[in-house]
Length: 167
Ligand SMILES: NC(=O)c1ccc[n+]([C@@H]2O[C@H](COP(=O)([O-])OP(=O)(O)OC[C@H]3O[C@@H](n4cnc5c(N)ncnc54)[C@H](O)[C@@H]3O)[C@@H](O)[C@H]2O)c1
Image (cartoon, rainbow, N blue to C red; front, side):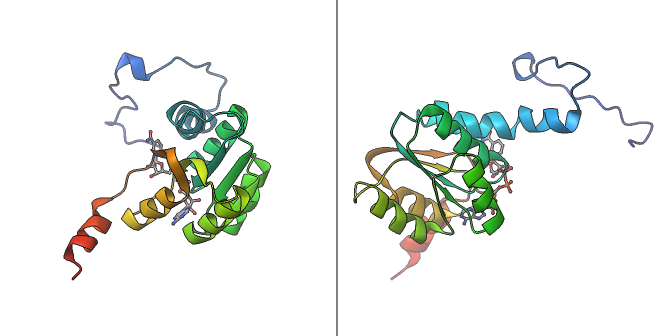
């Protein structure tokens, strides 16, 4: 419950809002208004996943799980869900992942194996908070000319600084 002097309103650009039916519960609408289209759009529109692609999704939480669904919808033939949490990896299989890995190294070994060394066509990063090392791992699984979509934001220069500072 909000204190009396706080109004439950927000100013937003008209292009960022749509009117929804009052019958739609707001907790469900919140999901469909953010994580679902962000993940789906990352795979379908930003990555432009093609039929037959191998797609790797790093982090299968609210956003990443929907990137998995988007990749499946777009016709990817192999979808690798990478997440340290076993439950998330198991759920990702229900949402369309064909393979899972617990970390970036495991994902690289797996992707090399299932693509006969060709590597993945697309990689999508949707972890909560990552770092440059994770982005390096994400790049490593993608073939030359492949597509990397970084949906989540990270202090990605951290890794670069470490290289610059190392002797
Ligand atoms: N760009 C956008 O429009 C947009 C919109 C919504 C959310 N986001 C961002 O997307 C990110 C994900 O949001 P969410 O709601 O799905 O978060 P979430 O916490 O539900 O999911 C994050 C997942 O990443 C996993 N993870 C953590 N470290 C990992 C690692 N090293 N390797 C692989 N997986 C790892 C976690 O186990 C978890 O399952 C956040 O950074 C959020 O701010 C961006």
